[in-house]
Image 1 (cartoon, helix red, strand yellow):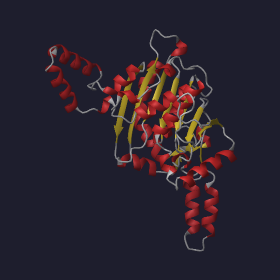
Image 2: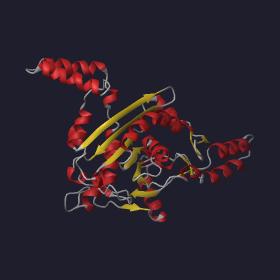
Image 3: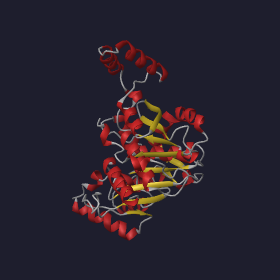
Image 4: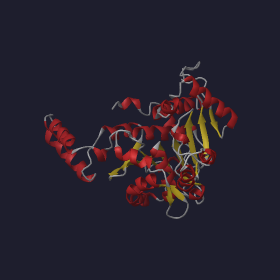
Length: 359
């Protein structure tokens, strides 16, 4: 892990507009960085043998006994979690790691971090909690299984929700509630990339539906129907990069066109398939406000800031967006549906935009 690759513009982290519900360029970048960082191995995931290696290294130094004692005490205080480079990255950025979470079963593998920006001495307007969920890890069959469970099921409290996403969120829900109850008076920002974005949407509904804060997702798939979000008053900003394909699945109400076409196919069983799709899948929608990152070359402007032609459009003109997506898709030979999903590209574009806007 390269500690210099995260939070490279520390000035943008200072005093973000915590109590402003409107979309913020700085907040978007900070949350994108955390959504990227959460893919690294979390303290709670570090194995015992790595902890032993740290003890052996400390024991061989001139202050061996003192350092070993400190490691053991910190391990006990953190429930045997191992001090890690992960925490060092956050600390250098002025961010405190409150807790990391990791749990799994046969159908899901869920990870998240809860951090705090600002200290007890900071003014209330400069303090915020950020809950960031890890996205899909394609090498983990449990993550893929969660993504593939696309049928909508009844959600606790009303509406319908993606079955796999609900299960993955519920694995963490009780632990998250327990910790968040200790910080009930602080603004809560919720974020995540890909599957993490979908979990962030569920967390906004069940943990922060009326909080002082916001939800920012990056390349998030649809997670539920419109009734699911009816109670949510917290602002939701859905950031989508160029022709990112994940942000356009599962299909929403546009699926009706596909269903109608299926029924026209002159083969036995097509009517049954159409009815099954309508019953199980139809109804997915995107909540909140779309923030669209245009396709552009990574070329520096006159001030040395990359992505000179980047446009970050809040609620963009649909015709212009469609043209931008189509051009990107064609020019990449269709590869952009995967390439544009990278959280690193999201973070680098949002950093460039924040630097340009806050010069």
